[in-house]
Amino acid sequence: MHRNFLLMVVFGVAVTAACTAPQHFWPQTDIVYDEINSAALERKLLIASRESEFKAAIISRVKSAYADQDVYIRLVGIEDLKAEDPGSYTAILIINTCMGWDIDWRVKDFLYRAQDLDAIVVLTTADGEDSYPQLEGRQVDAMSSASVKSKIEPLAAEIIGKLDRFL
Image 1 (cartoon, rainbow, N blue to C red):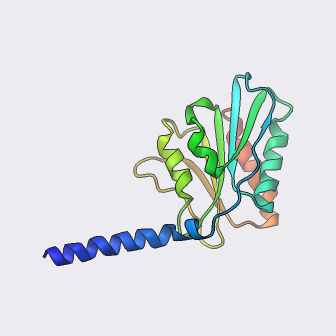
Image 2: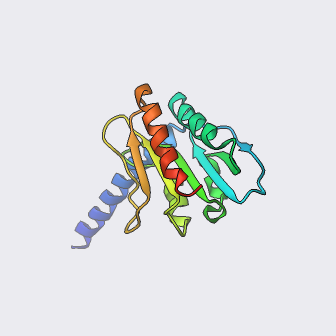
Image 3: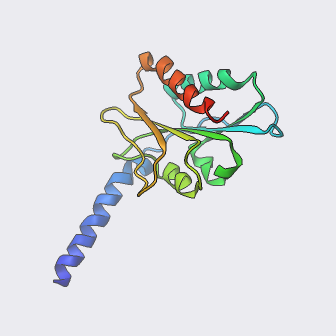
């Protein structure tokens, strides 16, 4: 009986480790930190992402939509989410990559720290199937897409529409 239980625990740990292993063995580069407009503005948008041509194109369109408005925009890498307070922002956009059949564990950690998920939009890029954050009883506005050039404009427009509700 104890042996079967022990085997099940070891198997569970091995499967969990296998699912997160790609995130540790093939780390991705974060976007460069940037700020647009004054941090003293009332409306604040946090954008966190990894670096890729597809993600940069989405971010460029989102930045352009709000750069001329009274919105403070802060861009950080996924690694830097640990230092960010989710409650300090009016809206948050996180663009991450699905690796090992799950979103980045740093993104999950940030989402668990957020008291209110209503103003958070998560876009997960994945090669195959859709990938959405699994947050045990909590839901976030999540989108999933392959990094295909033809999807940039419609995705950016959809993201901006979602962020407009809060900004």
